[in-house]
Image (cartoon, rainbow, N blue to C red):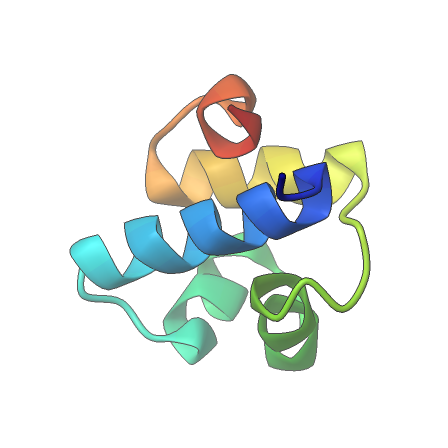
Length: 68
């Protein structure tokens, strides 16, 4: 079973790709560093709640949609 971090990583990557935006664009929309987005999508470290909120808003989904 995938960890929460792995599920979030896969979900963010899928939603970002579905919307046709790059990691750089997502970083700009969230105010996060592109490397943070890269690491998150690689499940290199668990995101904090603030990061999840920023990403959810940029992707126009709920935080719950990212962690389900």
